[in-house]
Amino acid sequence: MELFKKGEDYTTAPSFWFNKDNKIVKNRNLPLMTPKQMDELPPLTYEDGETVYQRGKGFIPLNYNSIINYVGLSYGTIWSIGCPLHCTYCGNTKFIEYDSGYRRLRHSSPRTIVDEIKRAITKQPHLSVVSFYDDSFLALPYVQLEEFCKLYKAEIKIPFAIYGVIPTYVREDKIALLLDAGMNRVRMGIQSGSDNILEFYKRPTKLHRIKEATEILNKFDVFNQFKLPVLAGLSRKSMIGNLLNRDTNERLAGSLAGALIAAQNGAKIIRVHDVQETVDVLSVWQACTKGITNE
Ligand code: SF4
Image (cartoon, rainbow, N blue to C red; front, side, top):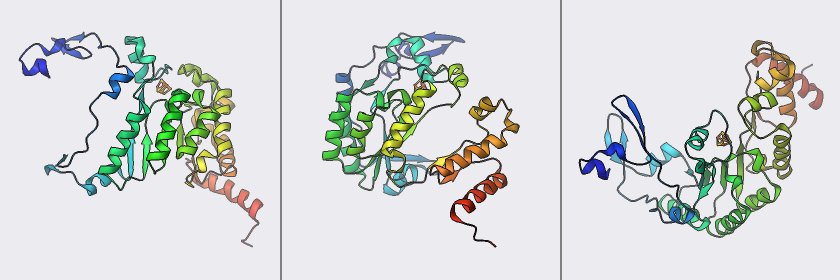
């Protein structure tokens, strides 16, 4: 912005790429920030008098109603950035190709993130949950998580959810710590239950590790901490195709087996393609387990 404002050649700005005369100019990256520098970044403000753009209305004052309309009761944030893995489809992989430093997990101190959340709650008292969208929250070192949990539990009285969990980093001690501090939901990305697909996408987490991570989460019953219904979507998935060597339109039997197993293990919502067939299977199962009520 400074170069632009001064009328100088802004296409020399570091960490940016430009299309200049139909040629891509790739400027050098600035060094990645240290934790101390991240702590010193200006805090998110949530000032009074902010405006929001609405199509047809222009800029209008931002009030509680508009915040609730846009983001609901959840405060979404990110504590750490970066991911040591390199899945083929992920933007992180491109960053790592360009600068191997992006492999490092970078984060501010626990004090900084807790203060950010406290500030948000002061400005938006309706907030009822904090949602972390880090790529890999559980890859954060135990000592950092411990300090974060101590502060969170003492100073923030609402639960939090973690939406970026990589199975490789799921550990029993970390889950216990986070649950005690108020974590009530996690979302773990596994990509596939097929070793071939995992290999294809260069996901380093092997199936046995996914299974171990799931067993740890099951042990703590994380999925039911908040008494929310669990949704299972296995219908026609590639893991069924790989297991049975079937094309997409030949996976009915495998999908029905998956739906039944999910329901038997507590899933309350089943996402399917073949509705009637799935209802029939689940009806027979329910009749067998609960007794037939229709004579
Ligand atoms: S684990 Fe997730 S964040 Fe990390 S490289 Fe793979 S897709 Fe990207």
